[in-house]
Length: 244
Image (cartoon, rainbow, N blue to C red; front, side, top):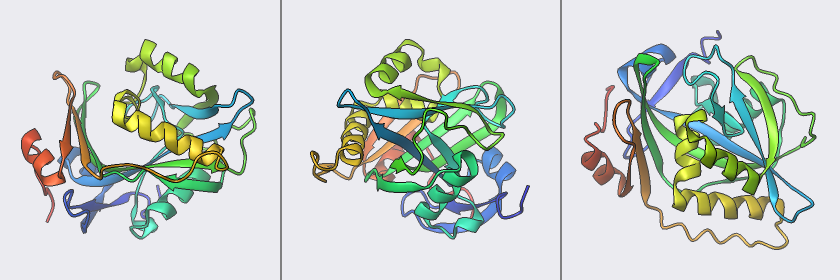
């Protein structure tokens, strides 16, 4: 693997400031706060709603192999220069060979902590950024170009949500958080309509700016906290900093 891809910036989860860089494998075992860059790629459809592109992760990836996920799930690396949009564009090219025509960032501070029964040594703490994207290619025959992605599929939004509710355990922990949280679900839906039908939906987020911290540890029920970032971390018993 390219050394720049394998070196992650590590962040203070409260301020969002970068504090160091560490190799990917150490970040995922030491529990350092790093940044995940995610995207829901959407397209308008003939029903007056929108379709979402979902991916299935390849079985051989290091975490959550074989699980369904949002359209893009990548992580910020050293080469991105701490630029979230640059990381998004890189991930879209690397995994799907697409370029965004329009994009919008979900304006909310998001944090997630995950452990995995199948990977007992992993502790994944992320600042997460979710984008909505209309891509330059939205054909039904769009295919992944990365070995990390087994397949992709366009699904009408309501049909997708019904599928998710039937089998939430088939999805990654982060996408299950996005698609089950009522506040985020509402904000994602509005963002997707603004992107696919801009003539009918004005940019008026209405987001309150509060942080949402989700903790999904093996053997415990998932928990979600809302409020100022530092308060959420304290209530969850999660550290503010790991690396110095």
